[in-house]
Length: 88
Image 1 (cartoon, rainbow, N blue to C red):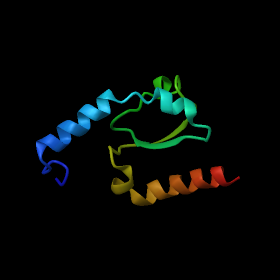
Image 2: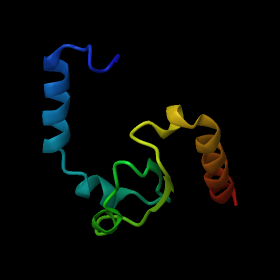
Image 3: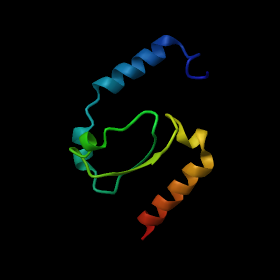
Image 4: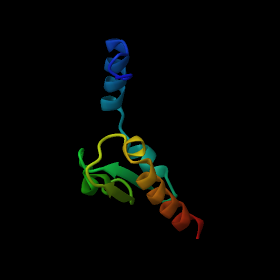
């Protein structure tokens, strides 16, 4: 509700900038592990992403764009696991 009540120009500008952005050059510079936590309702094209960088993705079944809001406990559990991996 909060996002949809924003002025249309804000959303249009953000979407144009998002579509124009090429992440490939930035991804080539990253020299640290990349992890994603995504909901399953909007599938991530993992194989396409791996053409540009190595990363690991945890999928939270039945969740959408905001898994940290939809299932905070589940999200925090996965985040804690990832932090543990990175702390080794």
